[in-house]
Image (cartoon, rainbow, N blue to C red; front, side):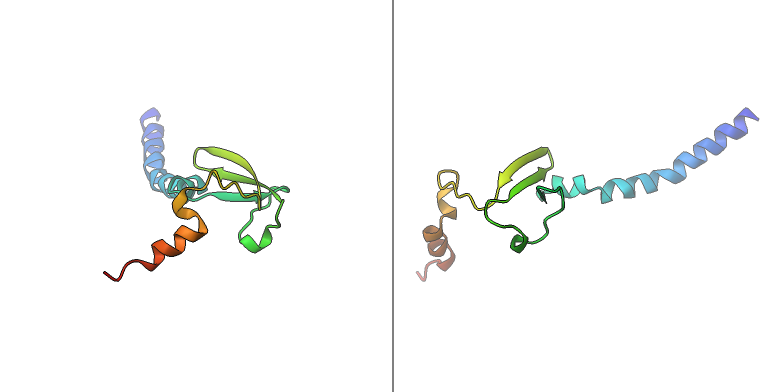
Length: 98
């Protein structure tokens, strides 16, 4: 009887393995690990569109390795890399004719 129970448990584990792998692949943390982030508002609701966020709104941004609080609309020029500033962006996008 013991061998029968062990055999059934082993078979159950084997059949559950693909389901476990699928659940792991669908986990939102796997998406975050690819470089995406989840943004939540002060009420912990997901923010899906930039238009939903007012300047000064408190946000919670979840990355693959943790969370960071943020305030929408606050510019910190010193944090932006030079190539992301408005004037340089246009120059980079235009390219060269020669």
